[in-house]
Length: 300
Image (cartoon, rainbow, N blue to C red; front, side, top):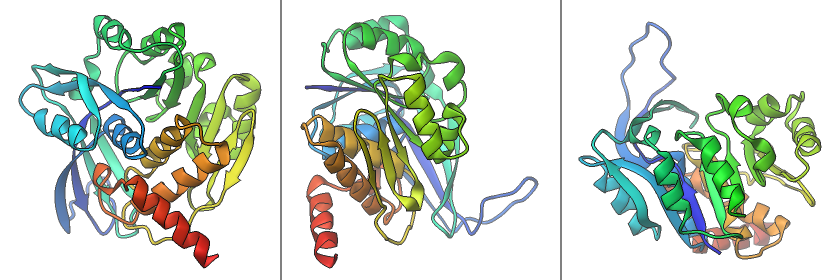
């Protein structure tokens, strides 16, 4: 089973700050670093590190894109379906405050240059039963979902950023929906993430909803229901934690692991990722995740 991760590729400019900048305010930064990111890239790397066969599809700039391609390849991701375009790659400006929380400004760049012809070309390399992983940082998302569904692929969607998802995306074709608490409530319309996840399941019975609950853990609402509490670790930087969670959940799923094991592995991977700075650079290896789970089990 192959995974097509059709998604964004960004160069992240990360600034460490005491607090997020307010309107009209100028503040000094404590540190700055440049790393490769984008939800697509992060999730591709996480799935590959979880042991899955991952092909990334998307666009990079002809001038500034080589770093993104090299980073994917170095982490075991196939980049043969990534196209170069004569404009700038996508980038993000990320503030990380003293509590480890993040605030992000996103520039689409080449991520917004997906074409109908590109979708047909990319998906021609996959077949029924393969997995299509998507986020909302590229254009043509509804078309990609419809064509992937027509091929019989399993559709995995992380609807972030949330803008326009309910209005434009055919959620009735999505098999796995990965959301955080806020996204669950915005899409499902409930007062809590749990209530919203339940409503989504009623509305889209084919869908399995996987919802991260921050420090409270994560839940799965589908044919099987599950909950796993978060691990108690000190957060240094939460950037990319959700992408790491999705990557290790899907990476475990394609190895035919059960829901409980997928949830445990994903939660452990996310816990390890928030203890380091950066997004793609903080994603742990499968060996590190397995060792972490073993160590935490021993402490229990």
